[in-house]
Image (cartoon, rainbow, N blue to C red; front, side, top):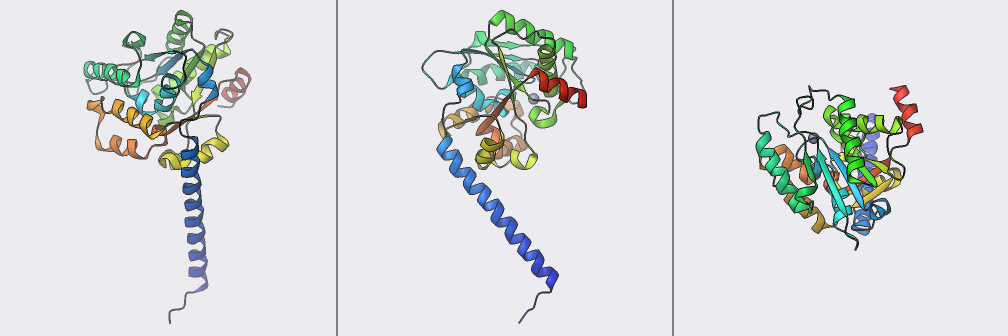
Length: 273
Ligand SMILES: [Zn+2]
């Protein structure tokens, strides 16, 4: 008969406790996802004209699919969603192709061709090594907010989901507008929340925790999710193996949680940065 020493017993107990905990987290998350799929998200329901700011072609599918379909795919009243992509994603010299792919992706998602704006600026180059000037981002955002008469602006939060500095620049550009009081009255600004790596790749299992700790949650139905994946497959130049894995496991192809930007909280947190 094999006898385990005290340390081994202790380790086994901890391992089982961890397995049970993760199993419970995943099971409750899946049940929650299934009960919440397709449920209305009030903050998206009430918006009529929405500006979505992204950094690269494919961000709309990789990170904002639930938000886009939560706005355009549901509800009876016709809504407009304007997508402003601040670069052509030319890091590998494929900018022209990536622009075309973005147009196709938008068609699948239901974004009209005339509502898509793609920027190509030497100050906004795609890449981790390129820091985008906050004033340029803020100026583009401000122009579109006023010209398009939107009532909701959606972009990345300060971590930018993947930690990409181009994503983060969008947050800081919009935050700068907010701090300067340049967001018109009645316009709400929401950020898609970043989560830890562990939660990022557990797909729908993160639904319950997201709902508990996140702000506004929007959860896709399986049919809506397929539409996001179809849109992502329009980005043929981006479909390398790790992005395929990302699409399978990422919670961002199942759900988004959105939080509002508040000027007071911004001042405090930027001061602490
Ligand atoms: Zn990106």
